[in-house]
Amino acid sequence: MKKIIVILLGLLVMSCSSKQEKLPFLGNPIVNGDETKYPKVSAFSFIDQNNTVVTNKTFDNKIYIADFIFLSCPTICPKMNVEMKKVYDAYKDNPKISFLSHTIDPKNDTTEKLKEYAKALKIDDSKWRFVNGNRDSIYSIATKSYFTTAYPDSKEPGGFVHGGGLLLVDKNRHIRGVYDGTDSKETERLITDIKILLEE
Image (cartoon, rainbow, N blue to C red; front, side, top):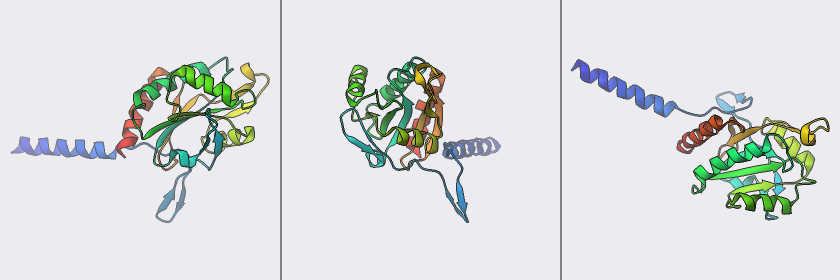
């Protein structure tokens, strides 16, 4: 009998811990009484590689992974794109998962160039959007919504400074994780965390 109780308690602990496994919310929440509001990705409107307008509504009821890159980047972007493609390959058949890459060099990364790049990756470009748009809007959303960095700097290789994170966004537009886009182990962690988020 004692053994049965110990086993049951063990199973209870295991079931509780699995239910409690939840990804954190990034950013400073606003607490109003019993209500806690977490920061959300602000409204945006960009143009993707197919000349299609991409807004928040594009990702309604979807989890998406975002990053900030530029095509002529001589440093971390090629590695970031390799790691993002791994995540894409893991979830390309899941309609609940999408991908969003913002160019921080919209002047040079034209829609046509983004289209060529997407084509070379052999992706479903309705699932992975490469967007450009107003430069200041891209920099602003990078800093204020995605908690990352993006700005021009002539002293830096390629002429820009930007964060190397892959950002996990839930269906309610909350940032739920940031992962080093140059680290394969971080990519594995992101793939696992997406599974957790899908179960929430």
